[in-house]
Image (cartoon, rainbow, N blue to C red):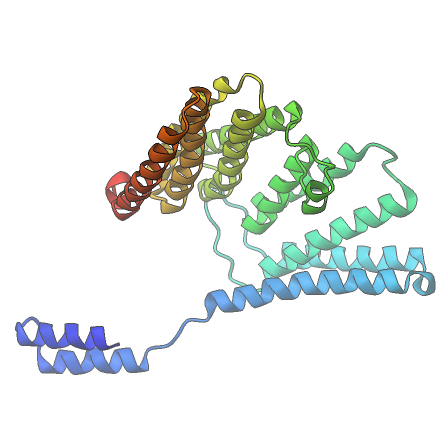
Amino acid sequence: MPERKFILNTLLTDGIISTEDKEKLENYEQNKLFSLFWEAKTVLYLGVLLFSAGAGLIIYLNIDTIGHISIISLIGLACTACFYITFKKSEPFSFNEVISTSPWNDYILLLGCLLFLSLETYLQVQYTIFGTQFGTATIIPTLLFFLLAYRFDHKGVLSMAVTGLAGWAGIAVTPRGVYDGLENFSDHSYIWTALGLGCFLNAMVFGFQRINLKNHFAFTYLNFAIHILFIAALAGLFLETNHLLFIPILFVLAGVYYFHARKLESYYFLLFIMIYLYIGITYITFHFLLQTGADIELVYFGFFYFIGSCALAVYLIKNHKSLLKI
């Protein structure tokens, strides 16, 4: 606030604005409304998640009292009601971005998708309707969520669909599994499957942009793909026997996402390119230096390397607008 007063006084002194203009600007700053848009959206999303989690907990604690058929019927009716209301109140489908006239449709659709997952999981656990075909159990909600995301222009449901696609492809890492050593990152299938999935997501962006279908979904796809691809490339660099193969892959990924960052004018993508590339370059540099057998020289080099790289990172962050051609 003091800075704004200083600016207004400077503009008044320089004769750029009049005293009347200065008073109007001061009154506007004092009386302007404060937006609670994102706070309200966060509370609503948390409400949907807490409701679905609470419903699941109640069912779990009272499963013997309520009965399986009653539980399935209740979840199915609630899920159907959510989808019906969404179809009834939604705007017509469009290839372009659709602005919803109702503030509730997005949350009702999200709740319906979460209830559908609960229903499918319950049927699989209780009655094993898919048997051992877990891929089928994963791909059905994934395809449904893709259709719903495009029909109702919902990025949250699209994120659930991409997550389901990753699970169907076999990329499922949990903190407990990592802690217990159940998920081995040195497994070659994890690395190459992740690279394939990331390339597929990029191909989807390219294909949908060619037909101008929901171009604003590109960021969601690329947001998943950049982390999947770079983490897979770094894992290959650290763990694969032919790790030198992943050096050009890492730099090609950096070039591709630098193109996307410039196209979208996204500081977010530029920042993660720098982070992942810095990790890769640092590993490559010290990996080859350690093979030379240098000791004290390596310590001195590391000291100057980290100082110089930090200075370069600050310079690049400071000049990100010129890097993005904004």
